[in-house]
Every structure is written in C-alpha cells, then in structure tokens.
Image: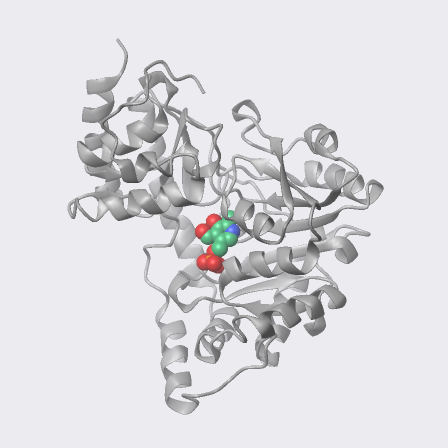
Length: 397
Ligand SMILES: Cc1ncc(COP(=O)(O)O)c(C=O)c1O
C-alpha cells in the first residue's frame, strides 16, 4: 500500500522470511529487539503498569492456603458466578454460571471457540486490519477467514454494508473486536444494532472480542452486541483479565456463550490444557470483587499517554486514526515513502524504538505502524524524538 521504494535488501533474513505472516513478523521483531537493549518498546500490547496489590495479595494467599488446588475444567464456580454477574451488570448480557468458561488467557478462549465451532471449510468474517491470531485460530480449526475491509476515513468502525457484502453461503460466524487491536477503533452501538440484524437475518454466530472494553476515550462508549434482543443465543463474548487489571502473566480469560457452546469448549479444554491455574483464578476473583479504582486510574494514565503520542505524531506530520479505545495509535506512515516493515526495522536499528509495522496485522497494511501507549510519558517523548531522527532522514523530500 502506497510504497514508493523497493523493499530494502539489507533487512535481516529473520524479518524478510516471515514478512508475510503477521504474528511471526511481530515475534521476529521482538526477538531482534533483544540485540538493542536500549530500545524503547512500543510493540506488544501487554500493560506495563503494575498489577494492583490486592490482586497480587490474593494470588499469594491462594498459593499459601491451597498450593495444589485443581479447578474444575470450566473454572472455579465462584469466579464463573462473579463473571456472569459482571456481564449482567456492566454489559447487559443475560449470563448465568453455565454460560461462562474460564480460560488460560483470552488467547486460549479464541482457539477453543474456533475448535468447538468450525467444521472444515466454514468461513469466519473478520475485520481487516486485525489481531492475526484470529487467522491462526481459524486456520487451525480448518476454517477459512474472509476479510471485511475497514477504513481510516471511518475511524475503522465496522460498516454494516461491508459485513453484508462479505457473507457467502459458507459463512458461519462474524468476528467483531471492539475496541480494536490494532486500530483503536470502536464499533458504535448504532452500527452494532444494524450488524445484529444482519447476523440474525443470515443466521450468523457473532464472536465479540471485548478484551479492551475498559479502555475507551473522549466520551465514546463500549457496547456489547450480546446484550441486544435475540443476540445472547448467537453471541460468543470473549474477554479476560490481562488488559483490564494488568495481569497478563497470570493468564486468565473467559468466554460467555449459550450453555451448549460452553459445554463444547469445556470438552476441548479438558483434552488440551485442562483448567486455568487455580491460583490465577483466585487472583481474578479478587480483581472482579475488589475496588475498580485501579482500572479507572489505568484509563486516566493511558489517556494522558495517548494525548502525548497524538501531539508528537502531529509534529512529525504522521497521520493517525482517531484512537477511540484500546492501547494503540494506528499511524499512517505512507508519507515517509518506505514500506512499514522496512521502516519498523530502521526505527529499531537506527532509532532504537520497537514499533510494529501494519503488516504485523494483515498483509494490506504496509503503509501503517501500530504504536502502543505502554510506556511512561517521558519514554514516549524520548521515543518520539528518536522517531523524528529516522523519519526525517528517510522521508521522501
Ligand atoms: C484483540 C485481542 N484479543 C485477545 C487477546 C488475548 O489476550 P490474553 O490472552 O492476554 O487474554 C489479545 C492480546 O493481545 C488481543 O489484543
């Protein structure tokens, strides 16, 4: 997309070899960044802020009191009940305990959903650009991904017409992610209502990834499609604790779905990883039942950082899509005139900043970078200065 120079032959083989595979490309860049210990990492999406102390304390206590506890495969019933209650109260989804499974991170939830849902050849509609683990989860179950284009001009909101245009007779499910990784876009309530009508009309299952739901800015609101009339029975909601409570390493996610779908996921989980670690589940229970003030503080901090980055990118004359949610600025780098994969490499090697190229999120996005807000404002300012030197050196005059 909008590349004006040939792909640089000096890009290391490790990057070149995986340039067409979003997930592998991101991992290869992270690996390469180990060679530059002074690099500022604005790559991956795991919160840098400290997990709140009461959650850590709950994990420690669980380790002391029940060091070897093994949970039921679908999760501790107290945690499933607390999740169901949260989904009813905050999301308006009519969930009961039997509608919830606790997973080893949202990542496992994603794979369990596809394994349980898809028959070979079934299609899943996915917005592009995307978190490319969707590709692998779908492919690993023998499914086929069909991309739904989204646009910068529309702040990467999902267009109901584009959803409808992507539907084929083999379409089984529609995947929605709001707020979005990598774009920071949200799917507005108005659009979700229209999309729900389409899903009902075409008998589609909706998979709604809401892992960034707490991080929404500028008065925008998160809305859960599973709360709409006629949708609870066809919606699979994916969420987790990694982002909301900065507890990525404890690996707790969850899926909410009709009870027969939860049973199917539980059977697959029993055969593979078994239950999520009980210690982590007890920490997650403390997270849900304890004070939510730390989450509000995280939101305030991310918002402040987001503003620092937006101002810095404007100074660099780099256009970004309005980030309405999540942790990322989806930045149009095509004005630099270098393919984003190469630009990411130069930013790392010459600027000591790790930023993922748009191609880490779909092959069409060689004119974009995904910059995350997961560093202090001081480091973000320093990273912007480092970016300036590289962008000014290479920008086409
Ligand atoms: C959109 C999206 N969904 C799901 C996940 C999975 O997160 P986790 O496995 O930490 O819960 C991620 C992680 O980056 C994500 O960005």
